Image (cartoon, rainbow, N blue to C red; front, top):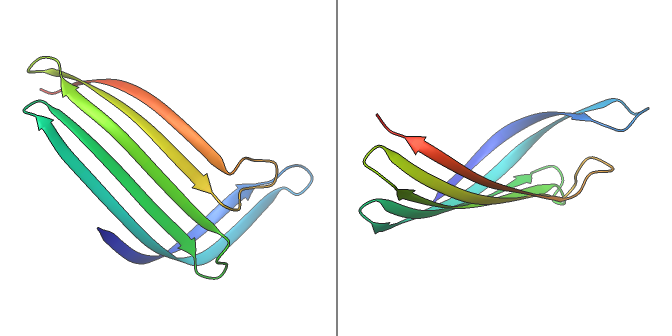
Length: 109
């Protein structure tokens, strides 16, 4: 479990003619990470985090990432992951939610 305070500076690129908006604000963060060893060569993990703008309670961000890694040989392993990201107050014209699906082949020497 992780908790903390921070400070964020953002440079948001807005639709023309608005240009660039710079935002500075204090944040509070909470995060959890869970790992489960399925076997000697495989692992499941989940990471979740929540960040809130302390000056505007409607401006919060949530991220969740789930991954599964498995050894194929003593050198190679495969990792699959899915991430779900939410920004409650996105830049105008953008969606609140984004997802990322990834697959990786990892070599350890």
